[in-house]
Amino acid sequence: MEIKKICILGAGTLGSRVALQAAISGFEVKVYDITQKALDFSLNTMQKILHLLVKSGQLNKEDLASILARIEFTLDPKVAVADADFINESVTEEPEIKKKVWKQFGELAPEKTWFTTNTSYLLPSMFAEESGRPAKFCAFHFHDVFYSRVVDIMPHPGTDPSMIPMLEDLGRKLNQVPVLVKKENPGYIFNTMLMALIGAAGKLLTKEVGSIEDIDRSWMVNFHMPMGPFGILDSIGLDTAWHVTHNLPDAASKAFAAHLKTYLDQGKLGEKTGEGFYSYPNPAYKNPDFIK
Amino acid sequence: MEIKKICILGAGTLGSRVALQAAISGFEVKVYDITQKALDFSLNTMQKILHLLVKSGQLNKEDLASILARIEFTLDPKVAVADADFINESVTEEPEIKKKVWKQFGELAPEKTWFTTNTSYLLPSMFAEESGRPAKFCAFHFHDVFYSRVVDIMPHPGTDPSMIPMLEDLGRKLNQVPVLVKKENPGYIFNTMLMALIGAAGKLLTKEVGSIEDIDRSWMVNFHMPMGPFGILDSIGLDTAWHVTHNLPDAASKAFAAHLKTYLDQGKLGEKTGEGFYSYPNPAYKNPDFIK
Image (cartoon, rainbow over all chains, first blue to last red; front, side, top):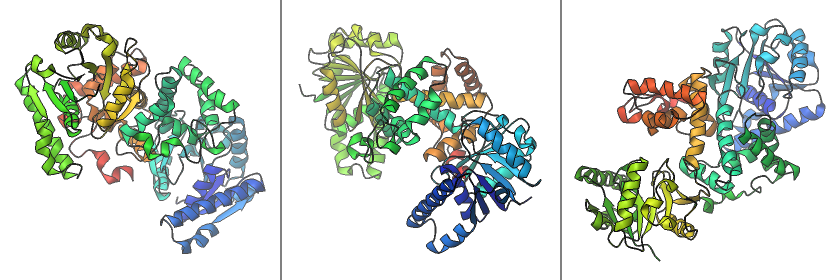
């Protein structure tokens, strides 16, 4: 079955980006959320991205109207899912909320609809049953859609294997590089590696082996990268990092979580609050002298 | 005391690169090794690098003769160290060999000479005493000198703190970015983080969460990097990776070491043997289709 109509549940940062890319790729898109404020935020997010895509020459200005015309925002679950071929869900990362949403939309969706979750840290098996059609349920996880163009395909043990080539094909149509996560794994593939890197950086800091700057410098200069692990943490958000870290069982993670907490207690959550390991909008690591 | 004369002990790949950069930076350099074959290899290595530096416009062809004229190769320890202001040692990574070398050169070196080791995985305190002047002894560790321009400065507990600013200054003169490793740490800063990344990638592979290609793809596309952890492993050498991994205590490292061993048993050591996780000289990850 060819997918033409896509329904996005949850109009946050990531959901909005997936919806926008789907419209750019020519799909008809419905974006659902529970408040008008969320939908307004979503349209605003899309317009900002479209502006940047035109500015960088990736889109023509003339195409913007037809792209936006393919997107419908709605507060009505029935409208959102009517005739949808495909759902990608990006609601709050709480198993109970996701269960409720999937129960609701599993009942409302037409029989043809494929179900996917864009969860970042949970596993599809935690709420596949609630959808009422676990065989048509899989994780389909985007990173940021436009800069990091990876889409993870992660089946749960009950997923129909025929979903995988279908999702690979859809991922490519959405201008992403599909990656198959063969078994359920929290954090998929990339986040597992990123967390290992950040954990090592955190340990070097809390054990006072190196300074924030020298740890970042080592990574940036060796790999010719624009930021190091602490710059990355500032962009992820120290609250998110603390959330992931403080439940890990090992002593090094606990020590780093405690260190992150001292920033949280001062309201320093990273780039979004203007202050984290570095100060924004002009963090030290962006100064060319930083790696001289 | 200004450093003008540098002695390099061990004319392998890294020693030769440090020696060459020192000569490019205007220092007088003596390169010591125990066989003529090693010295011939060293000169050959330098000529290849000089050719590339001229080709890429980083050096003028007219300067090559004077650069090479600043380098003297010798099999005679006394000649190597006579009047040296500074020693950087890159001999075999075996504590017993390093102890012997430092005992020998500690006795031969003039009183003014500063001692540094370029060890990759050992700690300076393992052989600082043997040099007879532990206060003037520090790790000064290069990555590859020309592409990855980090130099780690890692004192042992007995290092005179005044060595640190001196080494930072010298590192900058050698066109490197100095990084201070405040406490002895095997693998310094960068290798600690790289090993964490590689360990996570190895675990994803041995637990069959992802394929070699999908793990590398995730890293490359998300970070816009030219290779992923398995491509990096091929360039490091699977024998080196096995050597580091197989002694680690955790089950995941042991499983990955066992996996690496299957490659070693087939003579597949990575890029240098033409075969590792990928086949060289045209590994799949360099094909633009790899991330499509």
